[in-house]
Length: 416
Ligand SMILES: Cc1cc2nc3c(=O)[nH]c(=O)nc-3n(C[C@H](O)[C@H](O)[C@H](O)COP(=O)(O)OP(=O)(O)OC[C@H]3O[C@@H](n4cnc5c(N)ncnc54)[C@H](O)[C@@H]3O)c2cc1C
Image 1 (cartoon, rainbow, N blue to C red):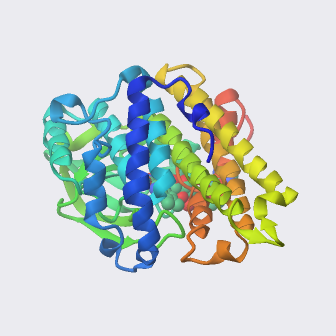
Image 2: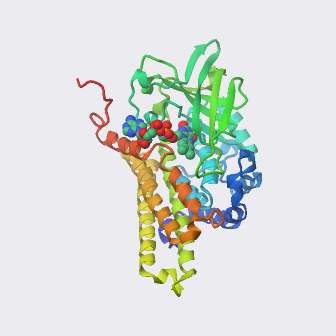
Image 3: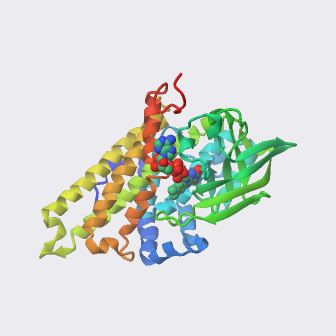
């Protein structure tokens, strides 16, 4: 086992209790479920993959409605340490299953956005539904077939604008377009959708965000994407055809990408934390295996090269945790370096935990490849983090653009 001292360092008694109840939920509900039902991950019927009872169990420990204001029945966390608590819980749940963690964290991230941007009457309506319905999920829709990485940079020129468009009409907006690769996209009840509202300017000045209930006329879920990892989260693609949304469903007009920082910063922390949870799972399973599996007349850990790999895994995990802690604190403190640190934490976690997962699979030998043994899952789950919430290279761009805003990564048009 990894020493828990470092994971618990600096946590309040309340946070430690939350961590423990998440750990118990994972050990008693999630891991046994995964072990007994590994084939369900491969079901081609999205509805048949994760049984409803798992989200209902998550509900019992109050982790489905984090970020929802208390006045609507949600679980409001201490503001000064909210992001660190998100990270701690995301890590623990992803240690059990990264897809399950994905399902839940989208609700937290979108809740943070809505409580800042949605009108009161819509907060009341939707937060109350979210609290009342254990299967209620939310989704955040930026990515399009012809525009993803650039949403993170962005190049901010009219030709790179979003292709999903919203046009003002009487009493509301008409939206046409398509979004792809969206977490919870297949089975969410409520969506935040970004669309171009001014074609003459760059994305930062001409993108608006809208609240879109699933039952809106003109809204279709086109497909559920079959993914390599995180398979218990149903990633989806949506099409909007002359979809009318009323005026009060406009969240931010024209400057929506700037306002989305309230979603992105905790979002990157949560991504890194889920990634860390996958690494912790890889380490724990591997540490257990090498102390029990006999090869060449002795347990694996007695072979020195095996022990060295284990040390490498533990060191990478600690390094990710240290940077993640520092970045979470920066977001909670609203510090000026928060933007740089969250991208560093997300980037570093994605590269380091891939290496941890690779060691795990290699140290399991042939068993590492067998689906029913279950360790290959950490490699599949880890690789998703190279792409989710920006690719590795785009994360690097974000870091350097923040450090050198006047020069680095500028649009490659003609020099002045
Ligand atoms: C499991 C999963 C869940 C996701 N969930 C969501 C979600 O909930 N909401 C949402 O909006 N999106 C979501 N995404 C989309 C995700 O944010 C994008 O996949 C990601 O931003 C990369 O975009 P892309 O796949 O279109 O790749 P592309 O942008 O086409 O990039 C392809 C390659 O080109 C490189 N590249 C692209 N542009 C540049 C550039 N300017 N300079 C240098 N290199 C460049 C990239 O680094 C990458 O290596 C999800 C993706 C996955 C895999």
